[in-house]
Image 1 (cartoon, each protein chain N blue to C red):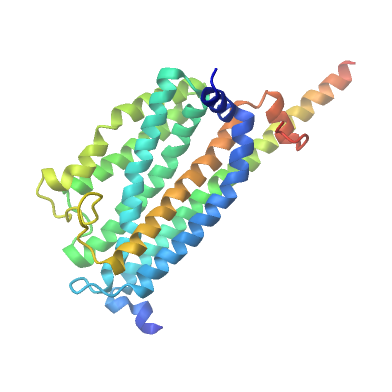
Image 2: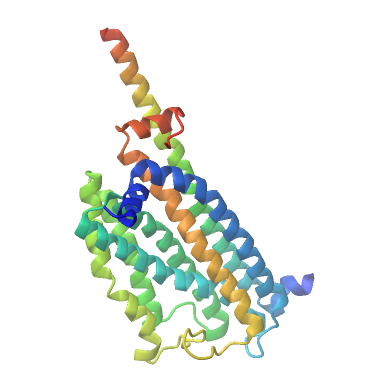
Length: 253
Length: 58
């Protein structure tokens, strides 16, 4: 084996993954909190009020990063589900299943904050608009994956079935993303663009991007925290998990 | 300060959104921690039972 495969196998081995993520997650959570706090301070205090929406637009600083995360988390889950189904890598199964609840949290926040924003701006909490409906379908997909995973007793079989569902559901991701272009929606179109200039003032853009960075870091911290629990649960009979439970041994050679 | 909390009359909307954001992420942060504690306790109990059984048999 070459060094890269060797490294991959080492990182992918449960004891190393458990040890490494244990070291990493506190720092990730701390970084997410600090960056998020700076971003939200910029959004709530430093950024000026919108000329049309006044201060109500400040919901954007959580709504948009969470909406991006709802898609990113799904993509990450489906990618790991694919690896899990094709190469049967245990860590990928666990990572895919760990990202479902985190993605569901971000999707729920997106829907709730969007609804709260919609009431004063559109005059309604909810409308069956293409963007809103497809985002709601996304939430149901997450809940379906979580439900299926918990419904089957054998953990590995459950992960494979749920991974299959996650993979099918990926068709919804481009639908959510392009819904504002494909259909005439009440939801506004894309404001922040990767290609070409964004249609947002820089005083509002930098807090938005900082919060987005913070939610990405948070996502990985939370997924790692969940994955290592599942790993100990799954490998409870093995020597390394015993050492972790009893608090003996350095766990790492 | 009151101006800041009022959010141009949209205070209730803005702050309830931020509250949902913070509470949801707090639950997201706590739930794996609580589960980890339970899993470790279960495993420890299982190992202890195994150990005592082995000691009886020898």
